[in-house]
Picture 1 (spheres, rainbow, N blue to C red):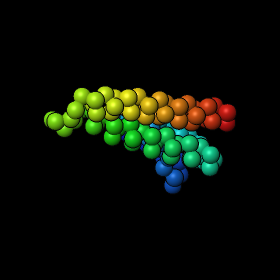
Picture 2: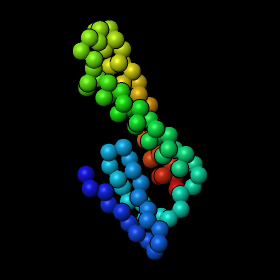
Picture 3: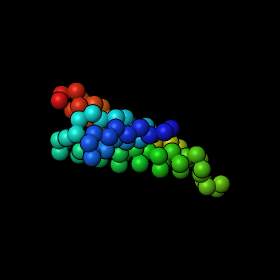
Picture 4: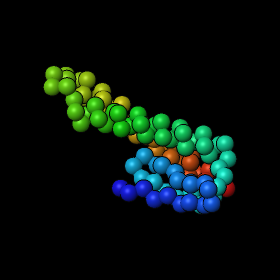
Length: 94
């Protein structure tokens, strides 16, 4: 996916959301929004790592361990979705 960037004067503003980039027309974001976005991006990184462990498992990975990884991925995805909703809720409040 090509990333789009909006240039306003000398400041270039773009926001990354896991696998997509969305434009932000405001130049200033409050501290809380930055914090929520950082938490969301960290959660997405954990999700990608967990998905990678499932997509490319060791050839001798026991079935029980694989099922544990599946459960862990579900918990991480739920956490990632909750953080995304927190960012959206904060953004809608503004």
